Image (cartoon, rainbow, N blue to C red; front, side, top):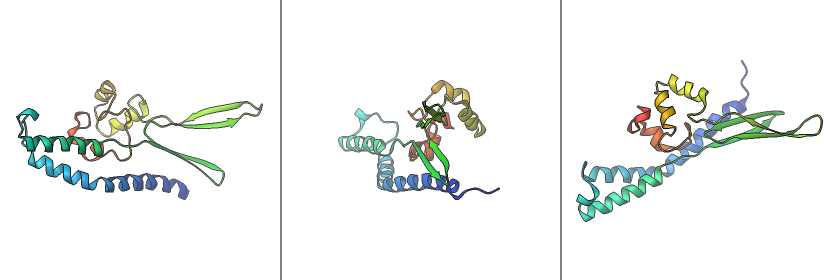
Length: 164
């Protein structure tokens, strides 16, 4: 089966964007790991020494800095064919004129959320608890089930109960 080169390009493009983002947060992740190793476990903030409280506050800032991710839609017309790639909750809209001159807007694709049955089936195939995902509706505080550059979900997923 012939696969147009453009279809091979899309996954690589998303991978390049994600890899570039992870490279930019590398220093923050290293500092986060260092601080985590210096703080005692199971001790509340008010029981920490003033120096440890400052480290704990810096840790919160770093966690905020490396959290999150992005969703994206990319569309490309190549050799008179339209190719669309989607990650997350964004939606592509196709605007066209009908033969009788009316304007028409068509949503292409469906968002990657816990409300999308196809997406839930994909996640079930990965061994995830779909009923738990449906009930929670959010994964790491986000409604989308796929995101570019979401370090917490991609590399620390074992810390998220729904993804174990």
